[in-house]
Length: 220
Ligand code: GRF
Image (cartoon, rainbow, N blue to C red):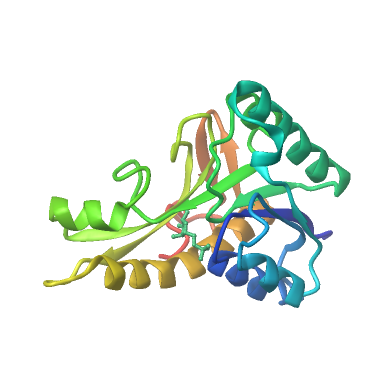
């Protein structure tokens, strides 16, 4: 089976990128990272990619100007970079730009994102603080297909994390991040092996044994 080609899009630290790099080192992993794109030249994650010998490209959104025309030009450059490397899936990993409906439509069913909450609860930023403020007892993370809405789209997998008494946002974020690092490579694997697929706006899983219930949570 030929390995699927991934582009990982980042804006910062890149710990989820590193988790995907580590997973893809296994010979039987069904995907390879063919490109890492950052919209910020100083994103620490770029160094992780370079250290792993992965091609990187900086596409600085600010260089394309403001407004709708600037966003369109930025996304055209992004699409060209992806097309040039014959990418199968785009994995957003801390990529801090909202993609337009036009871009998402162009790569329909081929863009994934990881978010540090159990979507559809707690979209957006500062989610760990928001979860503690709301007093939720179960937090977690979600890998989903990207649609035009922010932190929306068909869910591929989720992992739950208990909120502890006296938790801080930082401590909770760290425990969720540890789950993110397992969940993202697992979901990418299921997708690239054809064991999860998008159908009618939902993610359908192959049964593992051929008979049992569908694998709703890849971590289960
Ligand atoms: C992660 O928490 C991810 O869920 C969110 O942004 C953060 C990125 O962290 N979308 P990193 O750059 O992968 O370390």
